[in-house]
Length: 312
Image 1: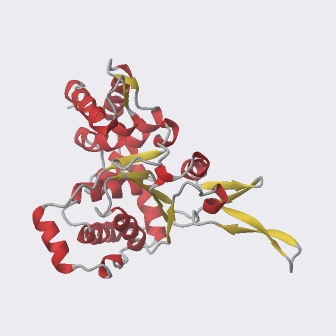
Image 2: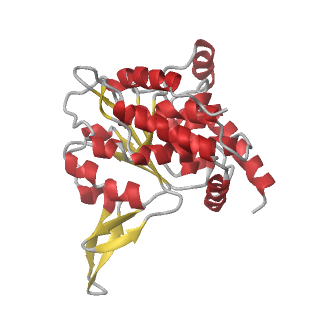
Image 3: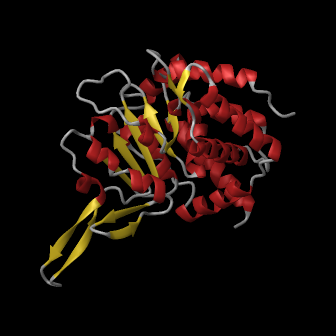
């Protein structure tokens, strides 16, 4: 597929998403880069800041299917992945897919789901498939999980374990809009129009073609070494109990490639790596002692990025 039409479609996609998430261009760019890199996203923020809007905008922008799963303490794995039911006409069991079978799945308030429900996402996020009664079913392509959680309301929640956090390529905070953007939101929207989607800018097969282009973005050996040294520094830092995994280093490379492709470059720069590193690595770093949360991890990562020399 020709790169020029793809670039135009990607630009329209980007502009459409930014139009419904005013004043949040950096978060939009990182989320789209993760989507193009095939990485799932964890949105951690207070209600009403645009988490659901972002998920809907990504699915609408690619003419894809969208499903929302509201995680609660009584949610069961079969409520997410689906079940086999008896077809009396055929006298056999047939598979009834759950809401996980969509291009973009919003796992809303994922930390309110019990561990069994949370674990139902692991195979899907890692392998793009689910297994039910020893039968494996592929998920749609592209497939993206966007999970949300409120960092302040922790009553009745089940914190995500380290192994599941590592399945998320990015953790983003959308934060409140700036003054001008919020005034425009108040003026132009109401509770009904805020639920509307955005115009479609590309088709799912174009996303697959873009992902092939992302894979071809050059990552020179010096940049690969830079990524490895950053990841290694998170593991050896005295204030870190558990550092970034090899999976996170791969995610950092892939997301940097996607960001470079969005900027219409054919190679990754150290600036791409530094720009994506906080969102990719901070939720995979666990400080020692009483320090907790992404703020402590981000401070440590900023120190690491300032001390690890970047290639020229």
